[in-house]
Image (cartoon, rainbow, N blue to C red; front, side):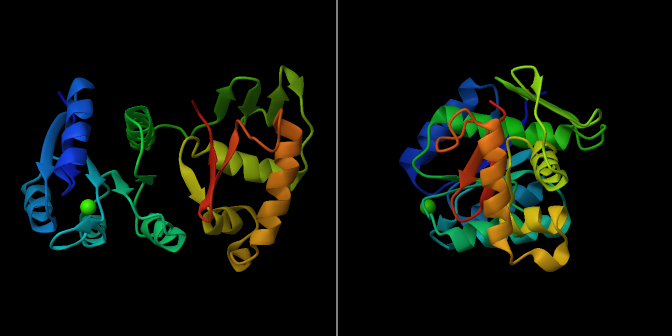
Length: 228
Ligand code: CA
């Protein structure tokens, strides 16, 4: 069965291009050009994933996000021209799975959708314990990190930080989430810890720490472990 995607976007040009890309990829696409239309379609049911624009003619997409989060756990990817960091964090904390800032490529859009679906699809399976991309290999079960097949020594904190990103590979993890999970709930404001340890991890794991291949920065929001 085709996955039904609800595409909420008021710009006809962007909507058309996204709809076409998604159809080619084999998704069934429903479109909504306003908040009220999107709400009606969402309530009707049968939607498997939502791509949500924020600036809509009759309100803010965030309203729909909050409404959906009260009712279930549908994957939601926010697609917006807004690049305000505070709001990105707010949206992730409000339950968005991910966000894409316009303009973006079709490849980027499809990659985020795949990650989002895979993450949901494996929610009931054992947690991710193995991560391999290019020269990097992380095995959480055996507690081993290798670069070009050579073991890399990490401090316990560096390892916990990397492991946290591995469990959500491909998805952004906010500063707050990382600080809470690696250091503890009382450390969520200590972003300098994160900067320091991320620099150390990059020095050990990246060929060129200034242009990371694995440990990617989402400016002002958090970090993402590359998985493609
Ligand atoms: Ca818009």
